[in-house]
Length: 119
Image 1: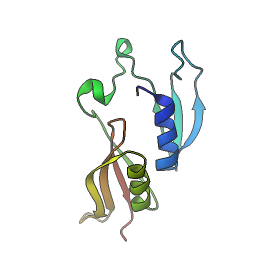
Image 2: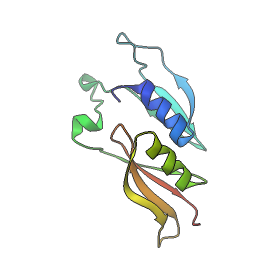
Image 3: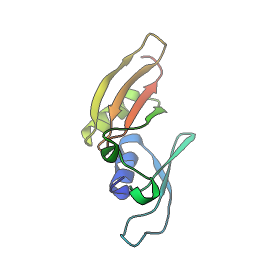
């Protein structure tokens, strides 16, 4: 992430993530890692540091991963993400495989599958 603090704030508001740890700030003022928890899962955000091989989606020309999070209300989470700058790639709707899900690109270029129970 170019700006881990901004990303952390987005994930807290949009995904309901809880920030559980932030490493001490590096010389450039950015935290080296920020840990989050969503339900029973956790994830980290870190600054992009090309010399360490830590690249952002912008550095790669797109997201190299597809992250999936299961939530109680995928529609509400998707709407919050969009309200805070995310983009719909695949609309959230009931799927034939028995889940309600869609794909969202967050403001930092990462792709998320937001999924939950059928409505």
